[in-house]
Amino acid sequence: MKYFIITGTSRGIGLALIRQLLASGHTVLGISRSPARSEHGDGRGVFYGFEYDLSRWEGLEALMDRMLACIDFPRAQMVCLINNAAVIAPLSRMGECSAEAIAHNMQVNLLAPMILTSSFMERTRSSKADRRILNISSASVKHLISGMSCYTAAKAGLDTFARSVGLEQGDDGVRIASVWPGIIDTELQEEARGADTVRFPSAAMFSSFKDKGMLSTPDDTASKLISLLMSESFGNQPVIEQI
Ligand SMILES: NC(=O)c1ccc[n+]([C@@H]2O[C@H](COP(=O)([O-])OP(=O)(O)OC[C@H]3O[C@@H](n4cnc5c(N)ncnc54)[C@H](OP(=O)(O)O)[C@@H]3O)[C@@H](O)[C@H]2O)c1
Image 1 (cartoon, rainbow, N blue to C red):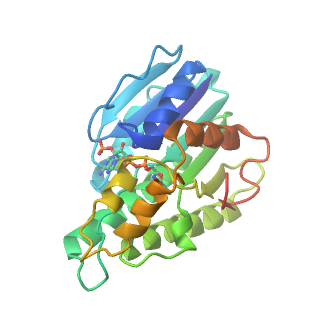
Image 2: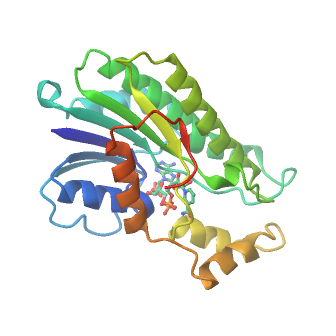
């Protein structure tokens, strides 16, 4: 049996991931603040939903305990953690971002994935299952965008974290990678397009992505991410810039 712990499953890429994994008969443990916006479909797999705000870092280890309790470890061939949830706000130049907004971005986008990764690794160490961790990062790490320094700093942190954790693993350790998924038609893109153009002039660039038909669908992206995660070579390259 294959198990997938995924953050940010109420919509967007996370929702597409759970639909496809359930359709293939896998077990998914999904985390978001709200339940999924639409049905998961009538997949053959099992879904456990956990409503949790990832900015509450103090409760993340207890959350990992509750999730791992749903896994039948003796029968588990593969156990994966997909750090997918993220927030794009604050969409403002540095100097115009509140301390609260900066802290929230870092807590959801970087701190939560780090704590979930560490607690996942510690608590699954004795398992014989193939253990894998996939971080959903962003090409904005390389192609910097004005007004997105919190988001890009957090994603750059995720990439460096994957490189660093990968370095620490021996042959029997976890396999970890960070991936840049492209530009996808989700609410995160909508938020960037709809942002106040005075505070966030780059909103026009996000509108042009949509107008020029440059956005991928969450379904196509999820399918490529699943192929990547399941591939034999997963973990050989710590940061994957294209899928
Ligand atoms: N869309 C793109 O073009 C694009 C490009 C590059 C990278 N990415 C990355 O792809 C990943 C998925 O993005 P998406 O486009 O699918 O975004 P999305 O549609 O905005 O979905 C974000 C998900 O994260 C969850 N989330 C946000 N804050 C949370 C919190 N405090 N606690 C728990 N869950 C939280 C949301 O659920 P709730 O609101 O219900 O909590 C939602 O399920 C992100 O890591 C994003 O950075 C996206």
